[in-house]
Image (cartoon, rainbow, N blue to C red; front, side, top):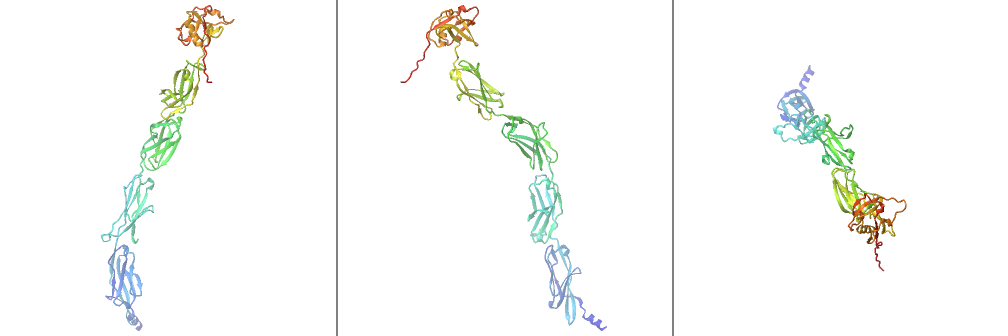
Length: 506
C-alpha cells in the first residue's frame, strides 16, 4: 500500500498552464515553411518535449526544440499543441501542456485549366494552348513555372503560361495537359487532360497547269506539270496521268497544296491530253484535262534542185526547194547564193517552199537555205550548182567546115531540117551567131550538102522569121512544117570561125 502511494506521488501529472507556451502562425499557404516552437519558463527543466496535431503525436525531443513543416499542404491544417515533461522536484516530474493553436493552410493556386484557341483547329493553322490559374492577392508576385505536355511528353517548359503551335497537323490530334509549379517546386499542380481534335479539310478544286504555260511545249526541252488544289490540308498524294492510259506517270506525297512533275526531254509523241489527281485520305479528286501541244523546232532544212534534165544549162528554169519535214508551222525560209539572200517565203501550214530560177552563167556556186519557226533559225547543208553553157540547138552538116552546110535543128532530143521557105541572110546570120562563126555569106540550097546514105531526118521548121538580131534560131518566130520536103532544105555559109585573141606578157 505504501509502494502504491509512492508511485502516485512520483508519477508525472499533466498540467495545462502558462509555464509552457506554443508559438506558430495561424495561417499559411501551400508550400510555405511552418515552424512550431514550444518553450517553457525554464527550458533547462524540460526532460521530453512532444508535438501533437489533432491529438496525434508528431515528434518527441529530449529538450526544448521546434517542429518544422518544410512544405505545407492543405492536409497540414489542424489543431497543434505541445506537451513537456519537466522536473518538479526530486524524483517528481510534471507534464505541462500548451493551449491548442489552429493552423489553416490555404491553397496557393488552384489546379490549372488548359484551353486551346481555336478549340477545333484545322490542319496547318496556328493553335495557342493556355495554362490558366490564379494566385491570391497577397501572393501575386509569386513566380510560376509552366509545362505543356502531349501524352505525357513535355512540349515546352518555362515561365510563359501560353504555348503556340505555329502549324498543327491531323497527326497531332491527341491528349494534352499542362502543369504549374512554384520556382522552388514546392507546389506543383496539373490540369485535367484535354483531347485536341485537329480537323482535316478535304482537297477540292484540283487543277493542272504547265510550264511553259498554255500547254505549249518545245521538243527536247523540259515540260513541268503542276498539280495544285484550292483547298486541302495534311499530306496530299498527287498523281499525274495521260488521258486514256491507266498507269500513272508519277506520284508524290507532300504536305503541300502544290506539287510538280518534270518531263526532262519531251518528244512529239508526248502530245495529247493530261490530267492530275489529289487525295488527302478522302478519295482522289481529278483535274480537268489539259492538252499538251509539242512544237518541233527547225533542225536542218534540206535544199534540193529540180532541173529539166540531168545537167543545168544556161536558160533552164530550175526549182529550188527548201524543207524541214518535222518542224512545226508556221515556218519562214530563206535561200542564199554564196551567203547572199536570194529570197524568202513562208510555209504557214508546214512543209517546204520552192523558188524558180531562170539560170544564167553567174548562177553557178554554193546554195543553202535557212528555216525559222520561232525557236531559233537553222541553216542546212551547202549544195553546189554547176551551170553550163547550153549546147547549140542548130548545126551545119556535110559542108567543107562546121560553118557551112545543110541547116539542122534539135527539138526534144531529135534532129531535123529547116525548109527554105522565106529563108534569107537574116536567118543565116542568126545561125552563124549561134554557132560562133563569122558573118553570114549566102544561102545555098541544101542539096549541095546531101545527107549520108540511109539518113532520114524530119523537116521541123517550115518558115523561120528572124530579124537577124536573135542569139539563137530557136528565138526566132517560126512556123511548123506542113508541106515541105527535103528537096527544099535550107543551107547556110558563114565566114570562118571566130578566134579569141589572148594577150600574153613577155
